[in-house]
Length: 355
Length: 135
Image (cartoon, rainbow over all chains, first blue to last red):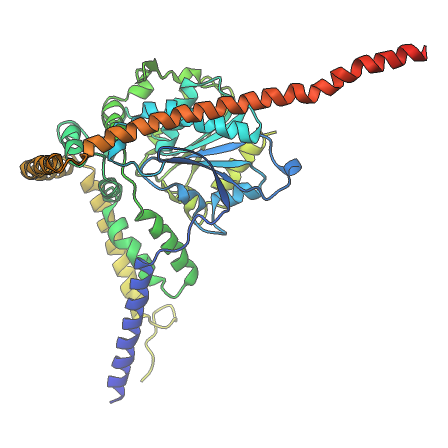
């Protein structure tokens, strides 16, 4: 009888745990809570200005613009209060702006890197400079956002860019053995035009599958196991839920840009070869003169370190630094150690150059 | 019944032992899978699967698109292509408006500068006169 009671109790505990697990997996948590104002928009793109918390005399005079990838939501930079890069930088006195690309619709399928770097970014930056009343600015690009930031910096070197931070930047595609994505999108196996003819834009779900399939057991098993093992730890559960909210919130990638990414970059490595033509203009990395900080995640499976190193020798910048961080593609900015290692290092580097 | 103790003197934890075995197994599996997906064979297999799906679904998709287009034409309603063309034109208009807005901003700033400088210039002759008078 006593054994039956124990079994019943255990069964009840298991049911409770399953319920908590299900709740954690299916509920979304409030994210991107740092107060901000919409100051500019064009098509789906929006420029946000974060409300400063320090008086003007204590703020850095050079504004900073954040450029995130095209196929994910940028709120990973402002994940949750107390663990937000945006919140951290605002409290350090930065005049902070975020360019959110939004989600492209069928009408945006022709959008290319050309449009993003020469139509959208210059206008957003013009607006930022006008609001900040500064001719100079700093720019941080992450992942595909780093490609956009690099191309913009090379095509518009006289636009006032003072500091450029490239985070896990996939710029060099020459090492085909070291880049799993390069193998997957090889022209022998992947017909990019056929896929885009069927889907219009590149579906966010497919891109998400691609990113997760690089580490299938980690993403489809261990990730959930970590939650299961830590259901009694509210801090871990909250962090997991916030990250899961972001991971499951995918954005399509405009067909034109996806095609360029596959054909021009992954297959032909045109950017590093100095042969990439953006709206008739060659992207010459030597034209980049801004101070440069390149941040590499040493365990990055999406952008392996070999993709971000060569930029250091291609630019004309005399003030440049390569900073290696232990961690993965997202972990270095949103993981538990980000606020102890990556953020303070970037902030210190930028502070020294934002006076 | 006496509690079981591990050789190190700590209480034997069957769940902990199970977890350790499980984690070791999963780590090994994770590494194997990372190696597996990083092969040409995997790329070829997924490419073939995707290609087969696209080839098989293409006739249905095209037929559906054609039927939809005809239906919309019969009903005198705009098609997806019409909406796309309209949206592209709207974006172009938005860009022009944005440029106009920026130019207006510049003009406003330029106008503000002389406005604040003007009283100084206007005051300058009077000041000169006063200085002359003082002499």
